[in-house]
Image 1 (spheres, rainbow, N blue to C red):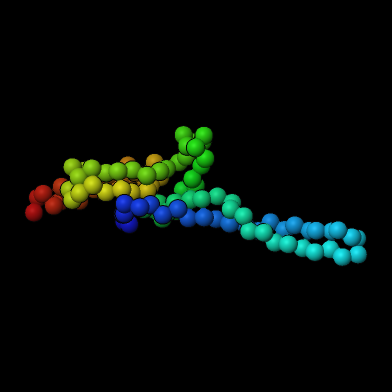
Image 2 (image 1 turned 90 degrees about the vertical axis):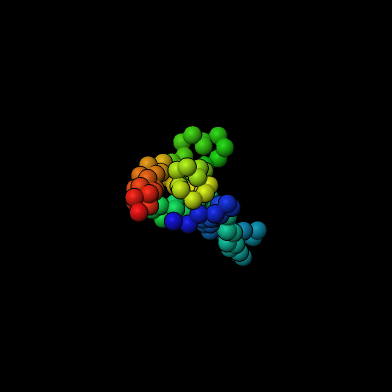
Length: 103
């Protein structure tokens, strides 16, 4: 699990081809690279979480979560996960903490 204080945003780019035809005899083609979308990489499963605009953040399927030291057993950790992966991650942390307490 990769954890850090600064979460890295990844950028997916796509090519947009424009044809400039000032005169019918000569046509020039330009390729512009524009940003398609930004995404995070899930710390639990490793797949992409697309970052939506500020208006659609409710529809986003994951995000940044701060896990307190009481939950992790070490210190405060910031993770980026899907909402479905978050429950699995918390369950694994609880099992890890219980095994550590038994020893």
